Amino acid sequence: MGQKPVVIQVVGYKNSGKTTLVCALIERLAAGGLKVGTIKHDAHDFEPDVPDTDSWRHRQAGAQRSAITSPGQTAYYERRGSTLDELLNQMRGLDIVLVEGFKQEGHPKLVLLRSKEDLELLGALNHIIAAVTVTKELLPSLEHEPYLVFMRSQQEAIAACVLHYIQQQ
Image (cartoon, rainbow, N blue to C red):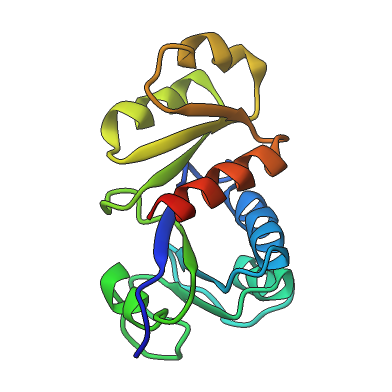
């Protein structure tokens, strides 16, 4: 069924900019010739394929395949939730899958931080490859961390970080 893609999670609290960053990464990575897929975790039920929703935006940005799941349904129009592993099995043959959410899963992560309260995520998560913040006030709190730190506006640099990670796999 094809090779397994590299998986990178984009995690953060609600309204931290996850979808905006995922769409920017899709555009940049797809423009570089990579086959990109996305999976989004939704904690609530959702209406699939509605214009301007996150999953719709993923496809508009150029994802060749995209999935979204919640506790009640999966956007392969199944009436049950899916595990991340089940969804990833549908993504074989791609170069990379960007996973929005599923914080507790064990894949490499980009962690989005909006405020000092969000810093608790860094201690609660594993496999962090970079922290991405929207505010310069958080930079001093992140300067001694063992991973890369970006401002969210540095989308080219974040994409380069992801590309470098893919090349190392």
